[in-house]
Image: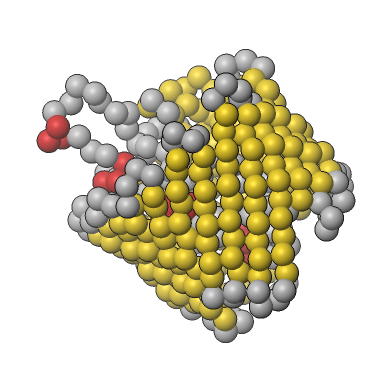
Length: 327
C-alpha cells in the first residue's frame, strides 16, 4: 500500500537501485549543540511521511541476495563518486553496472546537502534519481528508468513538511494532458508526541479503467518502540519495532493482501557487534522462509565482506550469496 513504484505493474523497482535517500528521511532542522536541553528535539519527535511509517521495521528485516556480487566505490572528488558493480548468478546472466553519485553544495543541516543526483547504467537500462530540498519544508524527487528505446517508468514526488504534519503527492507514469498513470496523495498529522495519524489516496487511470483506493494508518511510538497500522481496500499492514539496546533491534511485520487473499507474518532481528566490526540480520516468516545476512568490515582496509542465505522449507528452495565491497 505504501510502495508506489510497486503498484505500477509495468515497472517493478530494481533490486540494486535502492541505496538512495528516501523522501521524508532527511531531518528538517540542523542539530543545535548549544540549545537548551528542554528545547532540543530529536529525530524521533519529528513527523516523517505516511509512506515511510514502516521504515524502521523493514530496515531490521534481512534482505538476501543470490550469487556473487562485487562492488567498488571510488571517490573522484569530495562531492562525486563512481561505482562499479558486477553480479554473477546461476539464475541470471552475469552483468556489469556503472553508477555515479553527486552531492551538491547546498547545506541545510549536518547530514543534509542538496541536490543529490544518482545514476546507474547496465544491461541496456539507465536509471536516474534526483532529490532536491528547496527549503527546510519543501522537497522534490524525480526517478526515471529508461531502456535503449523508450522510458519504462518515470516518477515525480513533491512534499511539504510542517512543524506537526507532512503532505506529499506522487505521480507514476502520469500525464495531466492525457489522464493516465497513478496519482497518490499522502498526509500525516502528529496528534501528540507519541501518536501520528494519516491517510493515503491512490487513483489509477489506464487501460480503459479507473480505480481509487483509500488507506488509513497511524503510528504510536515511545523512546524504544514503534507500532504502525495501515489498513484499507487493498489490505492490512501491521509493523512493530523495538530497540533493545545500542546493539540489538527486532521487528515484526504482518501483511495481508486482499486481492490474492494471502497473508505473511515476518519476525526479524539485527545484531550489531561494534568490537567485531560486524552486523547480522536474521528473519523467519510464516511462509517457512529463514533468512540471514552477515556483514563484516575490516578496520585496516576499506573492505566489506557479506554472506547471505535463504532457505524455504515449504518450497524446498535455497539461495546463497557472497559479496565484496571496496570503498
